[in-house]
Length: 275
Image 1: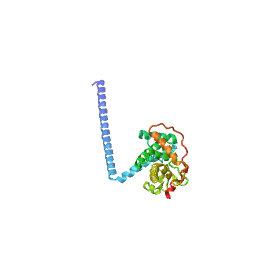
Image 2: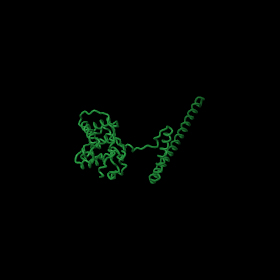
Image 3: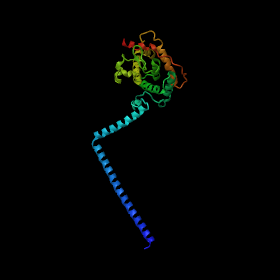
Image 4: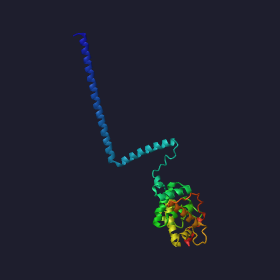
């Protein structure tokens, strides 16, 4: 055998040996990885089974994980100077007294936007009040524009307004006089919830109108001047505002002029009802 043939044989043998070695290594790695994956799978199944059978343990782990994530988020937010990091409240939107004016009827939206411009308040909360005035007004058989006119004159749409003798909220209801009406809403503090104040105020207004026999005299009772010769122009002012709102609701042009200050003489409201 020549040297050339010997070299060729050596190369062939070396190639075969390397091939066998690589094959063995590959087969070994496959077995190891396959067994490792199997072990991981078995461990995962066992963990899932344990967690499924122990709801309390699962809940604790979930709570701890959520706590760690929340703490990490708060730490990052605080580092960035975010004061709201620990004050997040996803239910806040549910408590907001506001709707999109686009959700109202055409006449209601027109009234809401007119009031928004006249009293310089946001259209969304005013839209919610307009919607409620229409709903409660229909139920009580009281014109919704009259309800809104009273709110405009009494408080200028300030839900936290309070007079010197305790008339409170949008419609300046005497809370301590009509505390029984707030019981269905959880108590007298509901006077500062705009929708609740509106509903109670409409009930008071309805009682005053029925007692007086007509709207104008009913307004005098509402402001506490039913037994007086002069209501300081209260009824006339409310009826004037109501007339403008009716015009807006009917589509007639009504110029938006700056509103006068809320009716300060309302501090005596409903005193006559006690007599």
